[in-house]
Length: 144
Image (cartoon, rainbow, N blue to C red; front, side, top):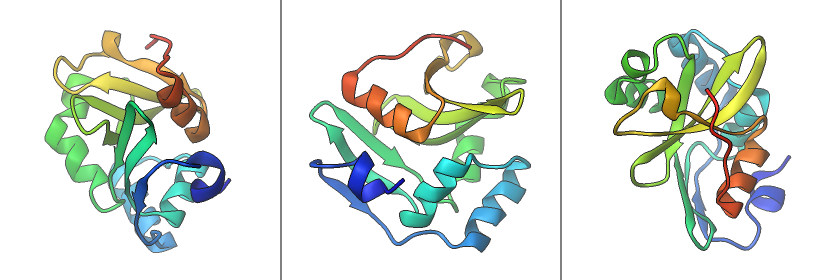
């Protein structure tokens, strides 16, 4: 999977230098959970990014150094206890994007940053690529 090629073709997106293996390992230690392999590949290609993935779909992914602090700042563990959600970015407004591990499998999700609660978590796919595809098409499936 390449971020600049297959996932973000034709749309403006500001990327950054990739995260190192030690930076990725540090965020996994801070979170106490592994990051999905496909998301680690994204981080290693661009340690955070910001831009449009479709005319009406904007995404701002945080750097590996910001993930823990931003999750703490949004109160993810407080508002989504037991759900296992880790936010990795936003739409630049009121929606957070992230992932949750369930029975050893990952699902990428969206959730409102205001009114964050388990019943508001929507599944966007089981891969990072599926998350971007759902953002491009504007569809999601509402499940917790």
